[in-house]
Image (cartoon, rainbow, N blue to C red):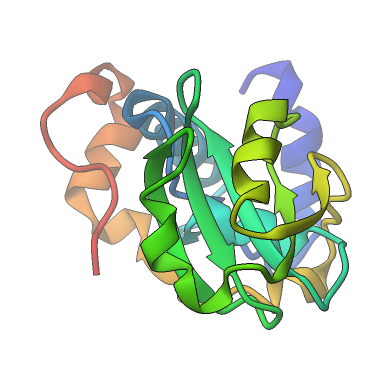
Length: 194
């Protein structure tokens, strides 16, 4: 085991029951596939056989400590001016999730007609651009744009819904990717749908 991960192994050995959660995107297909393969191989090497998967947008919305009265707009950048956008209500129920869109976001107008003009905050894993703020201000009353304030606490994971549990050891295709990283560019799917 690489020395960089010895501390993690030691931490997990004394932890008792361990819950593992990983975001499955949206984002770059190769980046997500590589990240999932690395993560699953790492936790499998620690003897952890199950992982819970959920949309990365839901993770960002749940871990953000913001105003509970505002709609949450999660904007994950893809390429210049392109984003995966999700909108959640005050209880973190999705209005819509993981929609690929480009600035100026005209395709959002139909999906948010019933909440247009509502107070909202933008959450992004990286600092948002002024263009993102200006474009979304056409649809919402934006009260803030944040790329921080993420709090990793047990109770924040309780807000997450729609987990899918995957048993790595019982999924031959996943195990193949985990144990044979050279297959990372294979044509088979890495994670189980539904």
